[in-house]
Length: 92
Image (tube, rainbow, N blue to C red; front, side, top):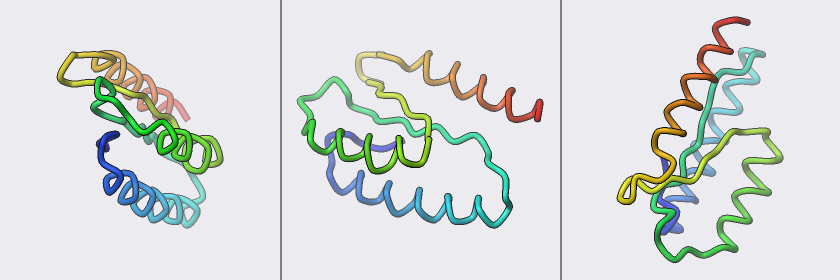
């Protein structure tokens, strides 16, 4: 989970995901990874979200969802999506 309202959080996300993706190549298999952008209820820098979406999520085929734990927006959906991803991974 990363903070959509904090540019430093997105930069850290880039670093962490890069490391994880490099390790995934080593094992030559993918595993469930869901990136959760929190604080979607705040006024956000849409350029930052567009950059994340294009450069990180789409190019690497990563699952992501925007949530607001404060307003309880998409929290249940994020949990359900993660459970579904884990179940699908186990079936492989």
